[in-house]
Length: 417
Image (cartoon, rainbow, N blue to C red):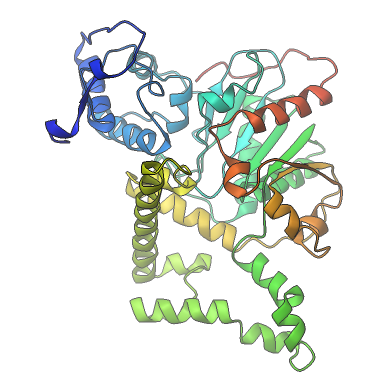
């Protein structure tokens, strides 16, 4: 618990809603957790999470404490729709959402338009704020994926291809007949690409694919690109063969060296198989947790000076062991992804100005894998392009969906949260 002196009073906030006192034991437990996580005294049942200063970091902490204390499986992204203690209590008490796959969050379930499915980036979850959702039509259903394993009910998957196939299966459970619109943040764009490939094998096709500022992933995709197309590779290629360049791969050998110093095992800890060695696995998870904590400290400093928001992975600061493990496995999945086969399907890319410059290279994976792409510039840098505190991207995606939907047929959607 936070000390009393660190908390502020609800009375000091400029709230317009009436104070509603908790009455039942469950309501009092929920309010106590809200007050602890938000560091505000005397909160009411109708106080809005976002009106009282809630953000993605606090949301992760709050949901973790709720699930731990009440033995429930409330999802972080559900706070966008169930954003008051009263709404949270009602959802917990009604057991709504049980029919949805555990990796799907219903951000907005009302409306008869074809649904949009949002795919997370490196954090493994999507946290669309009310400001972001304001860019969609009021009757636009929006669902978001979270990586398997976050809730402890399933084991995390190992590869981007497996994750994509899993998301396609879940998407078809929510909307069996389509049409389907899918958008992916940053690294999640590659999950979207593999979802499109999976749909093609099933004789289906998404109506629109949108990638939000994707890039070359750190890992095999980046190393393959650097080995054949970087300035360093062009300098050494005349004297060293490709096989020799692969053997002296600096990134992989440096990873093995670091792992050896920490664990005594000469293993590239970024490879999926590294999790099979207990000492290496423990070291990977420890590094992951430390990285999350460091990200939050940086984000808090930025917030203090009113600049950029906390980076995406910071939302898991108050993570359980399940979340840390799932997040680490996702990072390894992205590292090992390197499918270079072209996708013969139109793709829209919302790209920042800084990342658009990278695409001037014709050998960039986004150009070779996605030959039928259309770009829209949004924001100066990556942080601007993926920001969830603005409705800009939502408006762009909604316009794309409107253009693709001439007539809106009734959708057979799961009407649960």
